[in-house]
Length: 118
Length: 288
Image 1 (tube, rainbow over the protein chains, first blue to last red):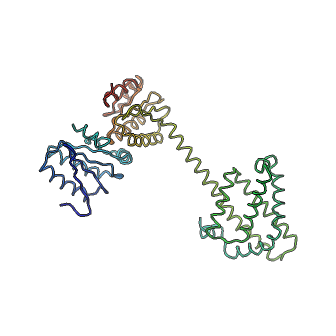
Image 2: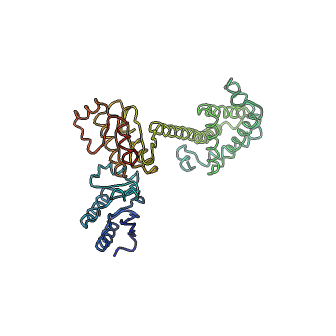
Image 3: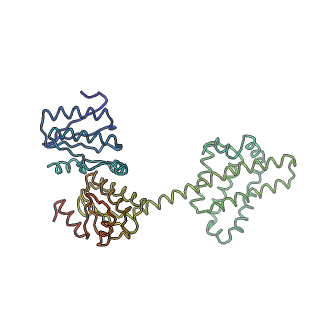
């Protein structure tokens, strides 16, 4: 179970699972996301997981690594994942920090993410 | 600006305001005459510019009324927030009328000369005169600082506006088709400009929901390691947002330089001509 003050939403859309990432990305949220996501993937078999990042305006390297773990977790369960709607400020910030972005599959919006994952 | 800060800067105290009020009691009955004298001086000092600033009687009358109000306010010496903002407004008006700060200061100086000389001739208490003049000067300077502050703030705003316009002009991002954006980069690409371009590029990608971005660098004069790194960075950031970038317009000599410098362009996709880039981009979005 996730904490009461951390909101995790899992939204099945067609064959996909859309996860809107909301609120500040921190250890607590990542923990809750991982728990709920694993539980879902254990019971269902979506064609892919799409993390909707449109609501995230700030992200540091540490949190970015946390997201990678999340993607890796999904991958281990045999599900590909993509990140949709990363904001300009976040993208600029991560590149300035020389973040390793080779692992990430991203798309401009959820719709595009679905075609990327197909 | 608040009074506390100003008082600390100019060393003014309630005593100064009192003295200004005292002298105000002598000056204000004759204020109309002083204003007249002042505008006579202006006519002389400004020469042909006088006509530009005061083209007709109405304008002149308005200006004189405003001067009168300003000085009456000065002699009341009620330095509250309202007074401070009223002085800032005076600065706004002068800046709008494009009165140079030096003209404003000269005018302030002359006004004070006019009435100070006049009332000195009437024979005021010799002993208290220096401290009175000092008080008047302190308060007047404090007032002038508010006005000049507005000038410089205005100038800063204008510069900011211009540099914004420059950024927009130097980054003409065009939407070619749904999902495809293009930006020709012309001239030198230094870090400052690269940062501006990247910011605009990412904003536009988000706004137009673009999935392909063509950076045409055929107009970039020199491509060296620094420029290549900027380009790689832009590509990476766009990629993170889910937008693929094609760098087009690499001349053979640029390609050669990049290889000779041993620059790792990574996954950056490049084409020789803009045409090839367009073909590639349109294929990606599903139009031939």
